[in-house]
Image (cartoon, rainbow, N blue to C red; front, side, top):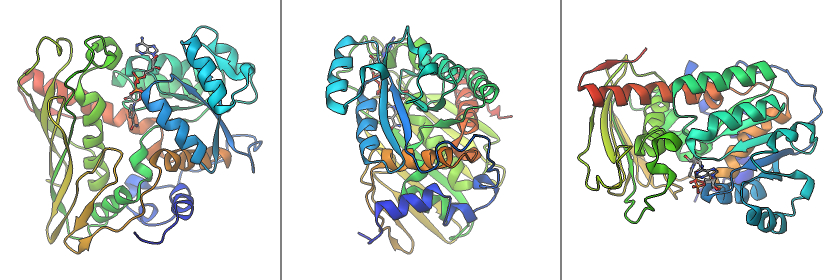
Length: 375
Ligand code: NAD
């Protein structure tokens, strides 16, 4: 492994120093401004996790490893979790909320930011309630169930004068920063073809799991996993797709996947002629990324899960440190908020909206069998 410490890597990534900051407009960091009152200077950002499921447990570990953020509060519907999290993380009773009294968080000066880790269909409500309570927000992917919900969330945060970030952990991960650089700086020439796929065999999923409930999930694996494939296409090319064709995969377990798709494959067309082909599925495990450029290639597998990632290019293997992805993300976002700087657009709410617009076009293409123009 390269002798780059997580701390120095994160510091550079959080400040936008390095390759990505030099890339084309897609990752421009120009829009920084001071909008807050500076009270966070030199302090850690106090974070409350909203929804204490599987991923919140991973984020809690990330918060422990974070340089700029710390866990100071929780919002949960389970009285048992109030007790176990209070003990495990030393959270004071006054910083523990449930979904009903959550709005009282407005008066709590020990919480600066609410991290929404609830099922997708609840993201909008809790993002807007947090913003209305004057708290900054990080919301997990996918940002919401629809693009319209994303717009409402962005507007609510803007109106409340708080910042809204997406929980896109790969934006801060060194292998992914490298593929952004290789693609956007055309190190091997123009990227012409991308293949990015992510799937998990969800045999044994509880029929009552929210991922199978359209109201709570917004859709099947396209919402939960495919969003990462869309992301990688967009940030490697540094462009927005202009049209898409898509096909649902046959359902292997139609008894379980009643309301949402079990798998879907799609083809994104980009303005420069590049094509991105992806599949996401709940029937089999796949976790890979491949980009073919004019004079070479780069690839990773595993590529999108929690890693560790294995990557290489035409020039040889990647050699980056394995980092705590959640800590890197929290630091990358927290640094801006602590310094009272506006989040760069590629890590803010607008980024989630862009992905949701593509997701809606993919569903429409699969449902109609037509090529859909993405506006
Ligand atoms: P989970 O089912 O493990 O946790 C969901 C939490 O929401 C639970 O604590 C549950 O009690 C609570 N909840 C409240 N109301 C609920 C309801 N009506 N139905 C179901 N649960 C309800 O889910 P998770 O895997 O932690 O996912 C939460 C969010 O995090 C999702 O948006 C998901 O896409 C995202 N996520 C992101 C990553 C990542 O790598 N960034 C990884 C996993 C999940």
